[in-house]
Length: 152
Image (cartoon, rainbow, N blue to C red; front, side, top):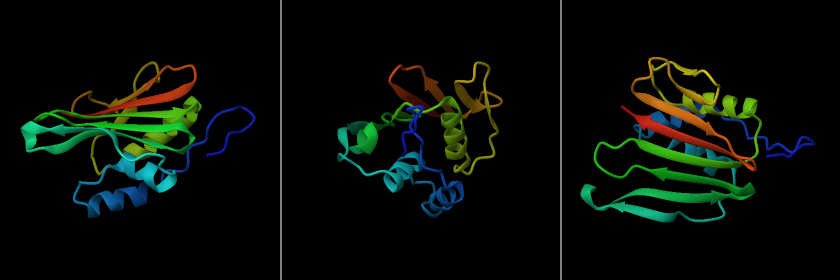
């Protein structure tokens, strides 16, 4: 939330235990990343660019939502048996902060899959590189961008 002398954005703490409990109570229906942003940052838009999946009975399958500080969250899960794809645009955050945030968000999911940082340090995913969630920090001069892909 604060921007210090180093001009880096500091993300609010991820309360892993709370997110995990809320996810369990929702029977796995809660969107952990979106819930984190809705709880910690003021929304400055409703859902934008909403996509409807006609093949799945007209359900909402994608959207973008904007929050204060220029935070932008995009969700996409259109098509049968498709992976969940998420994209998060943040103000510039240090790599150390980004890695810590990703690890805490991932820990909120009730999975027995062990994630590790792959060589190069920009991608965090299952140790066996099989099914699970993959987080990729993309290079950007003015923002911090994280892409998330979950599936099998």
